[in-house]
Image (cartoon, rainbow, N blue to C red; front, side, top):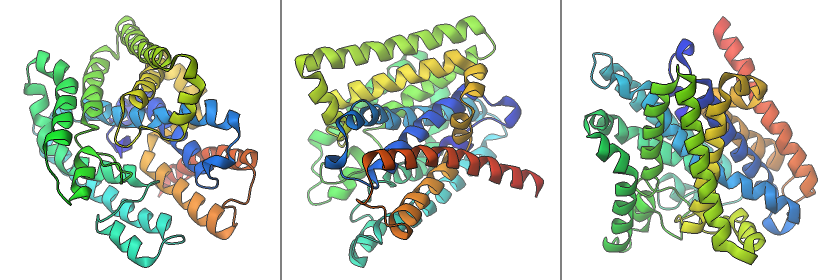
Length: 363
């Protein structure tokens, strides 16, 4: 997960922590309510705007992953520090892989037979709530070897790279015959029968994050440049959201409800990505413009963003062990009850990170 892909404490860019924290909090909001209720138990105002808004989380999360790589690792790919930092990334990938498999058991064991859980552990099928960890685990095991190429590419090629990666993913999805190997297709470019994140299909978002991270690193000490970058990102996000609204036309509410129900999320479809990426860019622009002041104002969100893996592990254990198993809240509470529990879980997650960080600092 990207929280350790950040600079040393004295060099942290708090806007990155805020943006990452916003992505994680929206993810917790989605998982918390969805983990207790089916969509047909949601209120209409719960679907739109609450759960439609949470769909920006995945795009924002993956972009921030690229931003963190650009800020904390790309500047060191050509110096003597790089082998140590590459080793750190690889170890992080192994750690994320461990938590991915453990949390797969936590998610699936109470409601699936042992054979299906074993299939998920062996990549014959996939979980849903914790699958984003699977994406990060694999990415962290191959990206450290590709990252040194990034600063060596011509600037024009770096700028074009998200579109080139999008074209590559499109070609692979349509021209490569995976036969019966649906799981491999899912891991690379996604498959409609598997709720997973493709390395190639989501690579454009990582590359976009690398671009934004490089620009942010250059602009971090220049207020004018930082605000121009923020305005550019917010404007781009607003244009994508406008394109989504124009495409939807009179059926805007119905389209938003479909987005809230994950229509077009896996594999990623144009309408879903217009909304998700548009909202993510708008949120990222606001976080960068707000800087340290906004990060302090939204302190619980920023704290969650400082350790996303710890936040992810904590909220999954609370939802699936405490709320669903021990308290028996699965399909047994109202929408408002589930929403309030989830909002409390977000605050509890921030408190857990703060407490464990305090203990670790004094150990």
